[in-house]
Length: 351
Ligand code: DP6
Image 1 (spheres, helix red, strand yellow):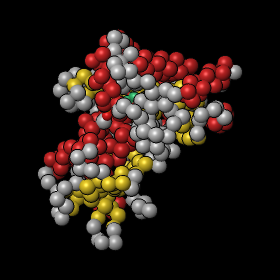
Image 2 (cartoon, helix red, strand yellow):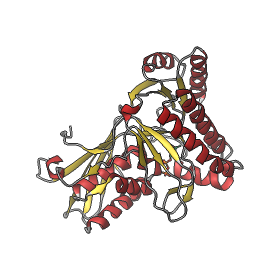
Image 3 (cartoon, protein in one colour):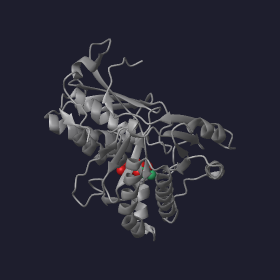
Image 4 (tube, protein in one colour):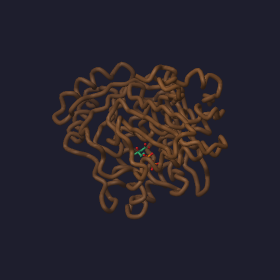
């Protein structure tokens, strides 16, 4: 496994100097999309997944986060995409809880100024919490001079949002299921260069999702008649997904990924109250992908807690799929991306 260290060496070099002289440390991370889905918690308090998952990290979508620990601050303050978060908001509390873990490791109580921004729609099923917490942990660990192996950074990110554990890694990543009290971390399965798949994201609605994943999966566990079956079948799906990636077997990966996605959505749709994330453009996109598959294109779909459809394409197939999906009624735009690298400190100036 790769052991990317978010090390103290270079951290001060990579801190950006502001006009006032205070030092920020910046990190970037990419969202990931799960091919084998995480939906359900074995330990809600510790945020330990009930099922194993496997994901790909997306290069063209980026969260950038910068942070400064500062003795003059009385509380953490957070700006997200240019808007200040209220300290009482659930997002701000989640960020402060994550920072508390890192402060405890560093032996400091200094409060932080956090500024974070996404170059893609936030909270619309494009995994902004995944890249967001991965970037936050790397930036904060760098600012606090913590020598944190990627596994430890992944564990801390998981406690905040389990999918974030996977964005510490580039290419293909796996997050195991855990038991009550088991503090699991994600791990690298293969780097991006192992199999240069392409992903076309069809944006089927720009707004934030109605019900967030955290609430949704607790409701699913409590009420979906299919939840237990979903959990019991997950290990076999994860093993099949891993094997398909390692063998670069597109047909096998397509089959198990679509099955995992549709099973997760069956659990969502049979939750009370129901979690219906798809809209008419989602269905039209799925139909278009079905016809592309029938014409021999190597492409498959996956969807998360939102209406967007992610089309995973064999190397070289992305442009054809992007052109087809851009013409689907209700699709406002398409994003095309290669597989991306791990979360990392970033020395580029904050524009
Ligand atoms: C549908 O990681 O957002 O995207 O751990 O409660 O923060 P929390 O949930 P989150 O759930 C992601 C669910 C999913 C599937 C996946 O990414 O595996």
